[in-house]
Amino acid sequence: MRFTLEELTVFLAVVDTGSLTSAAEHLGQPVSTTSRLLARLEAKVETTLLRRTTRRLDITDEGHGFARDARSILEAVRVAEDGLMQRRERLAGPLCIDASSPYMLHVLVPLMPGYKQRHPDVDLVLTSNEGFIDLLERRVDLAIRIGELKDSTLHSRLLGHSRLRLLASPAYLSQHGCPHTPRELAQHARLGFTQPDTLNVWPVRGADGRLMQIEPTIATSSGETQRQLALHGMGIACMADFMTGADRAQGRLVEVLAEATQPVDRPVQAVYYRQSAVSARIASMVKYLSEVLPPHH
Image (cartoon, rainbow, N blue to C red; front, side, top):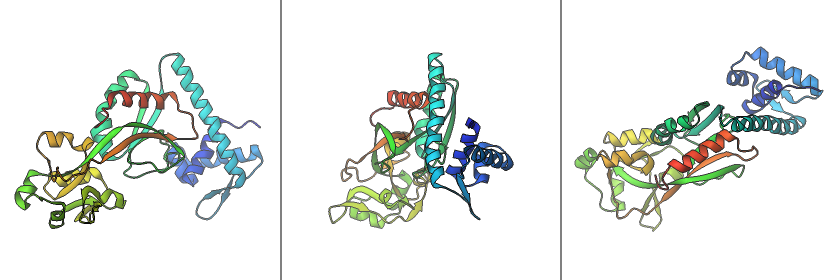
């Protein structure tokens, strides 16, 4: 039995995406090639790894076990390649990093030239997703997430914290006035999120003594969209320091209810899949970010 790394890669791509078409698109090859390699692998192992249905491919019990072993094999090859490059003192190869749009734009992108100076042969792939994603399915090596992690299958490295503040533009406050108590927020336009509801919990206490759960006047799915709305005078928003530092320093956004705001610092964490070894490329990025990011940003 001599299956190839290419066949294992195709098999896992189909498992993670759920279809031949999606796997082919992800791998950048024709569907016919993907189908042929998958069929060749199943013939070699003499086992049905994926069960064809009218809508998708479902993995069999045997396929589950084989997928776990296949991931270990590919990860071992990846680690070996990284180790070889390290011994040559030069990292190379792809590194896919995912973060929310605001964190990507305001924090990571400005830091990437410094990383590329250290590791010019690492090919960076930067993607943005506003919510939590399946790192395996999206082929993401390293994700930067803000807030508490719930997925126990992920390893994490704390990179720092970012404080939440209530902010509005001078134009909005000039036209609508500035609230003096949390209760007065009900009289103002509130910029919030479509989901999850936890993002609409603001760091001020309501009449019941608990942190206030607001009902957005305007709801968005993106923190960057919310920032732009606030800059254009559309209301009061609750945003993290990492994306508003320059706006506050230059007076484009002004803090509201500063004395009533509770000190809520959200953790910023680098996360990666627990069942894979930390490759040299992932480790190099985590090390770099840990060195250049301030504890509070």
